[in-house]
Length: 198
Image (cartoon, rainbow, N blue to C red; front, side):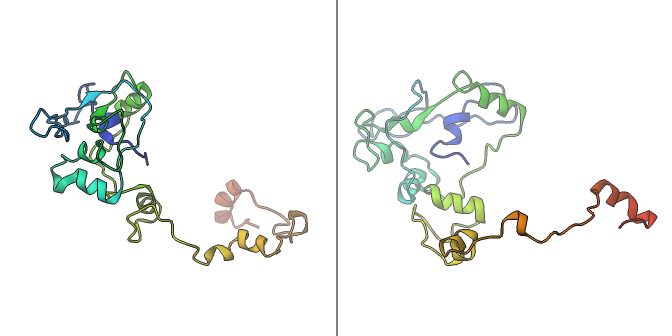
């Protein structure tokens, strides 16, 4: 799971680099929120490696960026008037930037050697924790924000809860011995047929 970067931001130029079977991404751009009647903000090669402001990936922001499949709300959700404003980027153009093989040679070498999920999308149009819940559990449990659920009671059944209550585990030297005569695994596979497994 890679956070806060889109596939296009890192790998949108794979088709240019000769990766077979990768479709070129649309280059129509997003409207300029400060000049909607003007030319759109098109994808461009980024030259900075550090963002000054995070891109909007809240539940509401990502749904407005998606815009029922039109995919034209990225600049508007990151412009100077948005919650994710950056005075150095009043139009939100940073959302349209990409890196290429000259910037990410290791990533592109991996992408050109192994399979790439170029049509894989986040499980939740939303922030980090709901997507992590999906990664680990196959569901977000209905969460749409980075609100971490409170204690469930199960942690008290684990070692950490026991230690907090003063319960100690037996040191290894005081545990009962399980095996007086261990059998090597390779013998275990051979010996059952001969009837000599002990």
